[in-house]
Image (cartoon, rainbow, N blue to C red; front, side):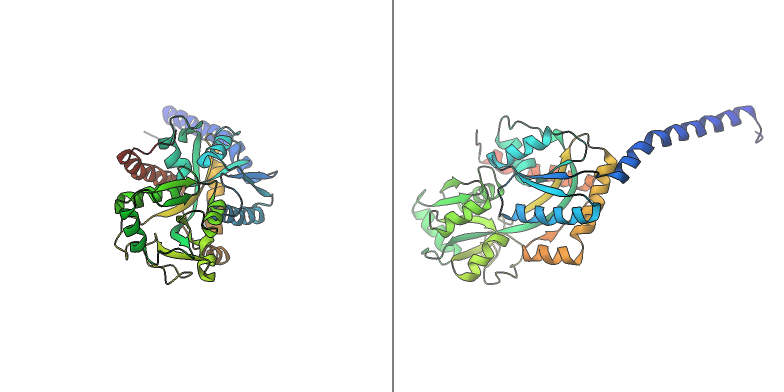
Amino acid sequence: MTANHPGLMWNRRAFSLAIAIAIAAFAPALSWAQDYPTRPVRIIVPYPPGGTTDILSRMLAEGLAQKLGQPFIVENRPGAGTVVGAQAAAHAKPDGYTLLVSTASTTAFMPLLRKNPGYSTDQLTAVAMIGRSPLVLDVPAKSPFRSLNDLIEFAKANPDRLNVATQGAGATSHLTAELFRASTSISFVPIHYQGSAPGLQAILAGDVDFYFDGVATSAPAIQAGTLRGLAVTSERRMPSIPDVPTMREAGYPDVTIYSWYGLLAPVGTPPAIIDRLNKEVNVIIQSDRVVERLARESAEPLPMSPADYARFVNEEREIWRGVITQFNIQID
């Protein structure tokens, strides 16, 4: 077939026309992403101010504002184990101007623990992973428990005599406590607070017997001697509290748990905007300044693509589905 064959020339024209149409269709979205944002963006944080999630969210908001030239405003919407904030984000306009900082509570726990949480994970789409941080099992400074085994032995001899603070029914601290219950065969009574800071105040005041809190928020009190850390849920000891052993060292490797933090958006948010936010977040969390700041918060960055983050969320949901189903944990 020669280069001037009519059929070949028609195919070339058709192909060129298809390419032109595709470029024309894609151009507005690309331009929108390049111009984005043109006004302030709100980041919903489904926890009260003062906890690790809030601290990391404000750090991210500051970095995004510097890179994208518009304010990224943190809006704390605590309540119902992140359900209040998740509902607000899931039903927001999918234009890139409403984002949600997610933890396992939002994407894994609540959809499994509640019959009708008022939102579906299908209404939220993955944007970027921020990082992860372990928990530490705290007791009051005046507690008689000097080690994890002290607490376990007492709890076994005195069923339901101890109470544990949580950051809310269905929060990571709650499910970690339930996993701890399963791993040790002890029983206790959960006392649910709204967020890390209220739980921390309760353990500092001696209103509860123990608490799985973020290392970042508990480490200063442990260093000051106003709290005692019995074990951390990380694979290795944490530099900020090096005298606190890991759960693995104490004989409970199953209680190796991390809180993780990621960014979601309402489903339907333009992919070009999601890709741009993902790129910027990954740059921010790997910068020297932010890595150092994350380390001060006992956290480490976990850069991922939107697709990898979505897979991670689905895998986490299945892991916790096993725990929730096995022990028939419900909060409705």
